[in-house]
Every structure is written in structure tokens, then in C-alpha cells.
Length: 410
Length: 151
Ligand SMILES: [Zn+2]
Image 1 (cartoon, each protein chain N blue to C red):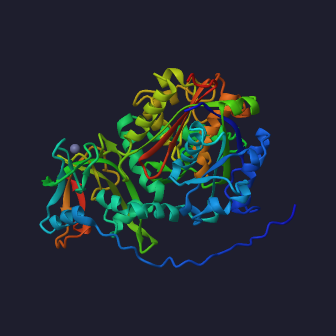
Image 2: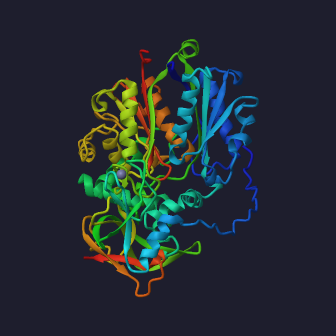
Image 3: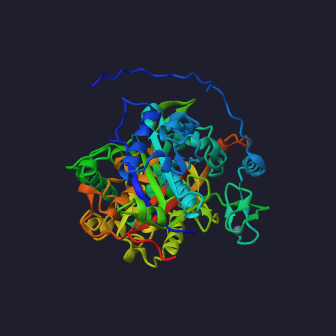
């Protein structure tokens, strides 16, 4: 294994509800070309591509092949990931493995979602279809009305059980979910690549939004976004020649548990807020990064939060605070951009969710904070080490990436 | 800037079909138990935990679970949400009244199962004790176990 660094990032110019002016592959090409421009690389410099998108959301089953020429990948190795919400980070890990193993010197992770051209709820049912047996084994009557009500809400329906368990176990209230959602929409207003921006967002305003699936309100839920993101990774040797600023990959990990709406304690399905995969992936990634206590050593975190309670819940799971402490940090202002434990200065997934990109954007946003290039949403404290978290598949798959401003001592 | 036209491709795909997933040996045994209003779980011979509905493997021990055991019909509501619509043949239908769905952990079970609760949304509490309610006529189907109500 050799050191690998992020040397460049490319976003589409905007992340919005509907990109009416471009096709799917034209949109992808915008991010690819932005990534090349930002690094000064030519298409022939990219040795391998790792692509990420969820087929069922747009109904395009082989988008990586449709986009081959649009990402300048003709005649190059291409690999494609489709792991639900975690796609972007799975693709990033794939690109990392390419370079760390020596199979490529420079690899590009390419991710997108163009939600406006499909139906994410139909797609989410399509994700459930192959998991139908697992749903049955969780005791859902899939043919009866109540069972279909439970799973028919797509992600928001399924996630309400998790949010309910989180509130029950942490001592937090719905008002804390309102407050974290408001903080992130305010942060999003400072990020040119965010979708839902509200510089005036308050917990009170979020609390006025309708209850969708108790305890989840409309204001707690991510939008469906059109957008694409790429990330370019290089070996230490190549990075030294190409890039002025590098965010080094210190550790990556992923972990899965039972395939159900629920989650597990000691591998038995009980509590969807337990999220053992997040706990285990974080431990493994920290171990690989040489981090003993993330609370003390990690300066910045990006959490995958399709639903606002997840920012608080996952901060506890990945080890950034004790269980039941995240909502107290929120109350004390510590999670803000000028706080001691800044999280999702980007606005998080709850503000922008082009799903294929979303877990990769957690990584690229950590990289921007380390490189000092986040612009208006650069956090106040110096960021030497940052942790990116990805969630999604159904409820039980998490990814972690830890970045630093210096390469690892090998 | 050129005007953006709403020109779309609308591919037609034959989506009006039904998949046929077999329930398999473990769920069949569980559903057969419904004919006698019994809830069966699978017990791991190594760690002793009981999982309901039964399934083949204990994930913790990586062992095939071969013992079936009957569980009590009472348990705890672990969490819940409130439903306002039903889905009937792919179409949303507004429910007559808001209803509670949640995850119930039967006493002695290591896991929770998703179920409908016969309790008003205002009275639902995570941690409350509940018991199974069966349909009068049982057929060996998932729908036989109608709901759970406060114990
Ligand atoms: Zn066992």
C-alpha cells in the first residue's frame, strides 16, 4: 500500500432541482471537465475511472457506459458502484484502492444523480424489491395495507423508526432535529454548490413545516437534486509533481449489517438507531489512520444526513461525542462553523442530495476544509484531520474516510 | 441564451408484471405456525438468541439455526411512526384515520419486528408493553397476525 492524496475536485456549476439545459451525460461531463481544469490535467493523465450512480433512480442501468466518452474514458479501465446512499464514497474507495495498490497512478471517481429525470420513490421501491425477503423477515405484511404503508413511504417512511428510536435513547427532542436542520440550511447558504439554502433558517421556521412521518417533518428531509461530482486521486509521487495542495487519505473503511429496516445489536435486529456499521467502520478507519480518539484528533466532520436527526445520531456513532451528547453540543453552539466540533459546514445532505454524489461530497467537502479552499463556508478552526461519513443502502451500510493535511508515515 | 425546450425521450418499458419470490423454508414454518396462532422463532444453538421471524443464519455466530421455538405473544414497542395513507395496488389511498406502525420486540426475542399497532397516535409511547391480536379466521398468511395492542 502506498500513500494516496486527493489532488482535485470537480462539481457541476450548480446543484438544483432540475437541470433542464443538459442531458445526464452532458451534466456528468461538466463535473469531469471542472475536475480536469482545477488540476491542470489532460484526459490522458487519468489512468482509471470509478463510476457511481444508482440505476433505479433514473432507470439507466449502464450510465457509466453511456458516459464513457463524456468522461474521456474510451479505452480506459472503468468500474461502477451502486451501493445506495453510500455510492459516492464507495466509488471514492474504489479509486483509492486503484492508486494505493499501484494499479493506477491517477484515478478519477465520477458520480452523479439527475433525480428530475426519474422518480426516487419508485427507485427506492426498486431497492426494496431485491430486499423483499428481508422485509418479510422483519415481519412486514407486504401484501396488506399496513405493511405497504410502512415501506411505501420510501426512505422517509423507513427512517421514521430510526428517528423515533434515536429520540427515545438519546433524550433529544424533535426541537433538536428542527435546530440542526436550520443550522445546516444556514450553512448551505454559504456554499455555492448547495441546493436548499436559507440564511434566515431557524428551528422555529423548520418546526412550522408539516409532519411527514412522525417524528420527521418536511423541514428535516433532503431535497432531490440534480448534480455531479468528481474527485481525482493520485499517488504520493504524482501528487508532488501536480498539486500545490493535497488532502491525504489516512484511512478508509466500510461495514454492513443485516438487510432490513431495522439494525442490529450484536448482530440481532433490534434498533435502527444502533447503527453498528457506523461504529465499526469508524473504529476501523481510525485504526488505519492512527487515530486513538476521534473526539480529540478530528477537527472537522461531514455526516451523511438524508434526514436531519442523523447528524446528531451519527456524531455519537462515529465517536465524535458520547451517546446522548450530540444534542447538547448543538445547544452549546459547538456544531456551528465557529464551534469546537464543526459539522456539515457544506449544508450536508439534508440541503443537497443528488444521491450518487452525496457520500463523495462528504469527502470532497472535508478535503476543501483541509486545503483551506471552502471559501465562505470554511470553518473557523484549523482543519488538520477530517472525517467523512456515508450512510445508505437500506439502513445498514456505512462508509468512513479520514483525510489529513500530511501523508501517512508508512 | 437559447430558449430551453421541454423535449424528452419517454421510453416505454413493460413494467406491468409481478415478481414471484418464494418465502423459503424458514418463513414457511413461521407462517404454518400462524394456523395455530403461534409465533415461532429460530434459536441459535451457540449464543442461544431467538430471532423472529425465523431465518437460517445467526449472523453473530455464522451458524445455521436449526431449532424452532415458540415465543410469548407479548412484547415491547421499541419505536413507532404514524401512517396517514395506505398503498393499494400502487395507488395512494388516504387512511380513514391516522394509524400507528412500529417495531415490536417480543419478550425473549433478540430482535424486533415491524407491525401495526391498535393504539391511537396520541397514546403511543416507545417502551410500552403490547400484545398480539389475531384475526378470527387464520389462514397461515402474514395478515393473520393482525396487529398489536396495549397489554
Ligand atoms: Zn448465535
